[in-house]
Each structure stands twice: as C-alpha cells, then as structure tokens.
Length: 396
Image (cartoon, rainbow, N blue to C red; front, side, top):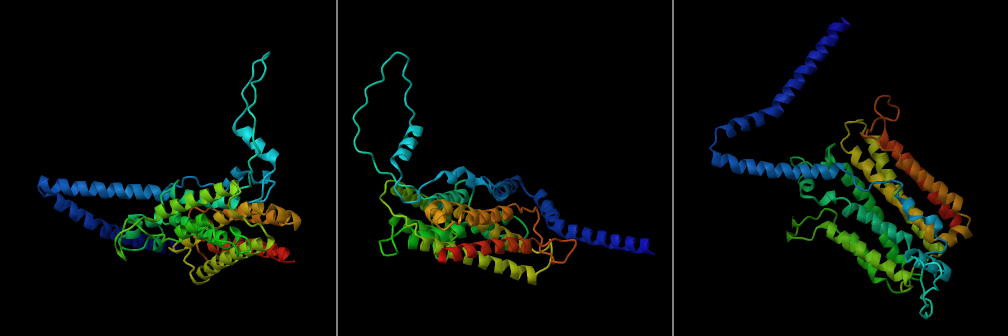
C-alpha cells in the first residue's frame, strides 16, 4: 500500500515536471522552427542581435556572481592598533620623521667614505593624523564602484527578469543588496562627518570636501545613462560615487597638512554610536518582520536580499567602528572603553562568518529549513546592545 502510494506520487510529480518543461521549451522550439525557414538575410541580423544580448547577459551574470575584493577581515590592512594619535591631532615630530624615513630610505654610503654634506633644513613641517573613518568610507565606496560594477544601476538589472524586479526573484540580486547595505553605511557616515565630526562643536563652517562627498553619496542608487523620469541622458550612479571618493581623499590630505578639522570629542562619538545603533535597529526590525510573517523557507524570494543588505551593513559598520576606535583613541583610553569596543567588534566578526550558499527563511522551530533571517537579526541585536552600552559609558 505504501509502495503504491509512493509510486503514484512519483508518477504525478514526473507528469508535472514534463508539462512544465514542455511549457518552457515550446516557445523556443516554435521560434527555432520559424528561424529555420527564413532566408539568410533575415537569419544573420537575428543571430547578431542574439549574440549581443547573450554577451550582455553573460557580462551581467559574471558581474553579479564574482565578488572582487570581498574580505570581512580587510580592516586588518589598516594596522589601526599602531595609531597613537587621535584623528586631526598633530603628530609628534619623531613619528612624522619615522614615516618619512620609511618612505625615503637613506642612501648607502660605501665604507671608508665620508657621508655627503647635508643641506640645511628649515623648520619641520607640521603633520596631523588622518582620519581612519574617512579612509574606510572611501575604500568601502571604492569596493562598490571601482573593484566591482555597481549592480543596481546596470541596465539589465533595471529591466528585471522578464519585467519582474530582480529583488523579487531568487536570482542575481545578492551582490546588489550587499552593495546597497554597504552604501547605507557610507551615507550615514558621510552625514556625521559633515554635521559633527568635520567641524568644531557644530559652529564652524562646513568642510567643502565633506559636503561634496555627502551630496554625491546621496545620489540615486539606480541611475543609468538614460532615464524616463526625467526623460533624457543622465550621469550614472558610479560617477557620483567616484567623485565622492575623490572628495574624501582630498579631505584627508588637507587633514594631514593640518588644514582641516576632525573633532574627536566624546559627545561626537556618543552621537555617532547612537546613530549607528539606530540604523542597525531599523534593519533588525525589517528582518524580524520578514521572519515572522513569511516562512517559505528556501522559497522566500525576498529573504536573500534582506539578508545580504543586513550583511552589507554589518560589513561596513565593522570597518567604520574599527576606524572610530582609532580616531577617538584618546576618548576610548580615558573612558576605559577598549575592552567593550573589542567585544563589540568581535560580535561583528562572528556575524560576518555567516555566509550561507542559499538563504532560507523558515520557521524558528522548523527542522528542515533553517531561519537565516532570525539568526542574522539575533547577531545585529547583540551588536546593537553593545553599542548602547558604549553610549551609556560615554554619557556618564
């Protein structure tokens, strides 16, 4: 009885699959028959168009699947622990001289010869510590638009899958969601740089380079070379983001020459941490809503873009907060925040280790399909809890 029922189920499943395949293949078979009866002068243009479309889709699929420069541990390359001066503060003369010696090693003098006469030197040039937060913001944007193609503004991404938004499909949207999550971090950071960190107590003038960077980073994420609203040619999104990178680099150059301001007061750090905690709290709420109201497991087509957007935020904020610990080093030491900061960053690293091949939004008590959204939301709330504790210590 059981074997008969099992055979019937398999037979019905096979018939459904055959009907589905026939429905998908029929238009292509009909087109093939029509194409085979046409003259060569008709076949060649059609073949050329198909080749061009195929090349476009091949490039699009390649760009969405290959993640260049993706490295959750890329913060280690900054060697932030070696920074001993807060951002914007004048660096000791010996540190600046050591950097200069490292960049321009002294020439070797043969044995038995006197060293060449040294030209008289003028007064030492002042050098200030650059901002690691600004460096990270520029590099995160470079990851999105220089090391990778900006997926959200690509023509084929905007056209969708037969008119269906790629975000509503389980295909080819993970990288775009990750990039938008990273961009959300850079946008928030650029706003804080303009409003508080790049000026003295909010009363001095706004830095022009930071203002330009913020304006460019706020640009529409989906702009291509041509648009309908408004109708006409446009500057694509990546061009604006590359201009923002240039402005951020220029600001740090000015800061290194002590011609710009980076205000590392404790209340600025309080506000910065508070804004990050609120941003992550909003993302946790989105994950919770999706996890509670949609339990389609592997078949939830929106679970993947929710997950990778949150992952992009964690990826970006891990780097930004690591940089903030260095930029606000004096405040961190005075308030004994080192252990708490390190614990928070460890929570980020734990969350970034979650990289499932297929995102599932199953029930929390399910035993077949896991619930990756609830897991990511749990880690975000742990990080947010640590940020709230950092804020409370700074407020004392």
